[in-house]
Image (cartoon, rainbow, N blue to C red):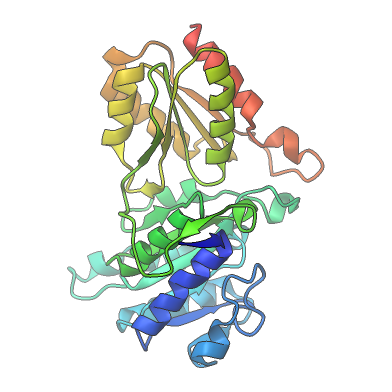
Length: 325
């Protein structure tokens, strides 16, 4: 298999889609000749033309309004929001239009051909307007699907699954890993099931759960824990909506402990939903309280980014507290 970074893998998935559907369009701020601010769409305008890969004005609400209209007519609409922090002007279009299209018509029409790509999270010294993780806002919205890859292989397979899905999907891309994560990726087409978590490593003492860039952090914490004699089961959630309750519950029944880590602020982050559901499902099997290691309840700082982000030491401290409870 070819070696790719995450950007190359995303570009490959988009390339396959554009070749597969002659009505598929990629659009967003600077996605054309420039290839996007991170170059995820490099070369695609030259290959498929300006009528199919094109720049939009700086209006996120307009991007999603246009995307909804295009998808409603059956064309694969591949919209890019340049940073997840910029998605909020489009919030009304996404939660009130995209998510409800199918339901308000009794399934007579829909925007299932809509895929929204957007870079999320910190790690690039982007400060408070280029580092947010807003997945929990959208997880409260029936009618959407939310997916987050952790490496290039996942990025290509999950993005292809999102594009092929019959529902509007937001695909959150961990920007810190765009060039940092490199791995083997098939050049041919493939997809990875949406809604299915992956057990990355089996263990017996504690379950560690994360998604996206935070997976690297819990893997580092698990290594420290293994050196201290604690066996960690590591799970990548991958899909936030829908999320795989069964895989997480099965793991927690075995280990008796659960630690959830995400970059977003702890209050009302998606980890809270996971904790509540697993507590309800696995209460009699728990050996210690479910713990969350997350971002702080402050706007994302620039100078104190390292203090804000949940790192391996914070997760390791939570592991020790859990097993010693």
